[in-house]
Image 1 (cartoon, one colour):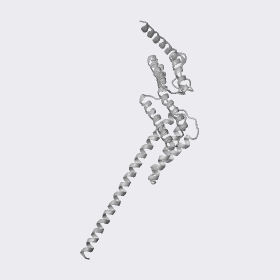
Image 2 (spheres, rainbow, N blue to C red):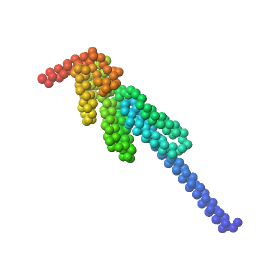
Image 3 (cartoon, rainbow, N blue to C red):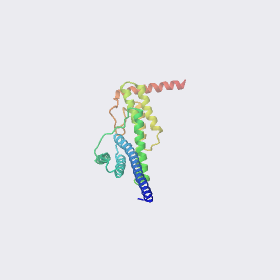
Image 4 (tube, rainbow, N blue to C red):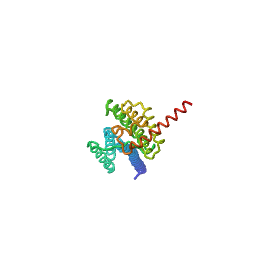
Length: 260
């Protein structure tokens, strides 16, 4: 073999090695990109599933929950296209499709807007807000009409308010059961203030305001069940008479202070 042949062979060998290395690097880069993309989609789907599960516990109307679950199904299908061999994606897709059947069954269920703490109220309100953002995005892509979007957002904003108001009313009821009339009054007034500050157009807000006012002045025991089905902590009439006496006494003291 001549020197020239050796040189040509060496050059071809180097070029071939560089091509192989380049192909390997590109394959690894593509794999890294795929893993990153799948991880982003997985995190997004997990956050959507949290919203669906949380909303289904507090939201009687399932239409919004069904819409968000459909987004989850679409995301799983997109991930499976990227990685058809990932069994966990198939399992997640099947779970989402199972929820679709459950949400479409029409089975009656009881929901509760009661929250045990401000942290829980904030977490659930964040889920409601996230649901609104998802609906707006689907509207922007033509998957939801403007009329539907307006209706759903109005309903979600009422749910957002209810979480705060109903939780405060229930805390007031609990305080009455402990004979802590001062704390009960504070919680009822907190609920009243939240309703007053809200600009929600629903006539239910006005009804809620009137009924809380009636509780504070002792003319009713609790909120009507159609407004607030969470009745397990409703006080009895005798307890309600106690808060009426407390309110009257408190108002009288305020009048004396004002007069002086």
